[in-house]
Image (tube, rainbow, N blue to C red; front, side):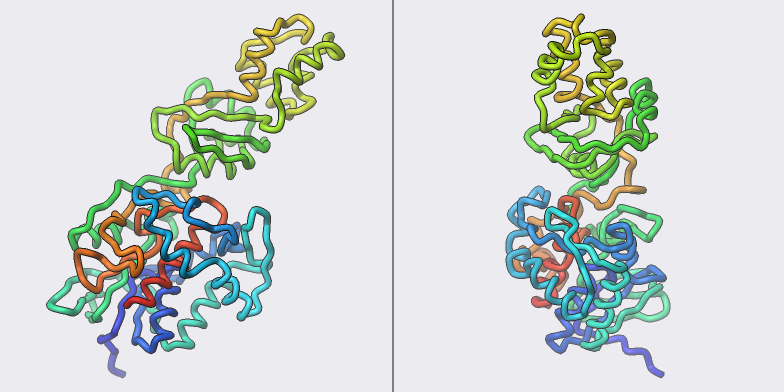
Length: 395
């Protein structure tokens, strides 16, 4: 049987954005080919949300995204809001639940989302090919030529949906950034986002003793702050609050942690001094904090003894160690555990309405390959659906 090589649109990358783009273009009657180098389609979808896929967030709006061009995401998100994807999920009878804060997860498995997308592709006759290593991409006159070493496919439009650099063990590569540079695009320097922070030296040894402890905390960097769970690990700090702030944190700068955001710790200790003055201060602190963490706070503040023995200045020092703990991370765990990649193709060189390159006609970029990164909680998937849909309508 002869292999078909000529298409209206070729999409490189069969992840969330690429499959959504393919479905949208296919619905218009286009002949669409999706190529992916991985053996399995949609691996990042499969592992997301602990295997249940946090497929969108009902509150997803432009302020939930980082970019050097912050207005870029407005148009696509407005034209494909979360409800559009929820409607698709409902049509496929996939049960889901709101985990809180608008984060929607499958009741069953993330594989249901992958199967849904592939069924939609099949319904509109989109060809999806896995294990296709692309050796070169060229544009000659008005057509793109995509060479896989065995077959050269051609198309009028080319969509780059190759994702970022995060989680290389499931196939992440810099292919999309390299291809963008080949066609004259600027790359905003990539770095890991939504990633645990690491520490070194004595501080790391002290934090290691707290491994496994989780508390609700407020983490701040500059004017940005997140109030979510904080987790102590054997490498440093993780948990949703840390992952969120990591996208804003700048190397060499401290972050501020409030271990009890609902309490003014100085006021509480001052009141306790009148009734629990004979108790050790770490034991009093364990009224509000896990005992291991209370011991850690007192050690960091350099204060130990009976609560009644401390004047206001020393109480304030302990309170600050709880409510305003300034800490300097050494770095992050890197792309190995990062959920997303910050940076990417500069969006000032892309149409915010169509996702088309302003440098090369009929070349499009969608999803994580661009300099658009969402907060934790389903926002990055919503960007994949919205940007994929925008390009799918435009090709």
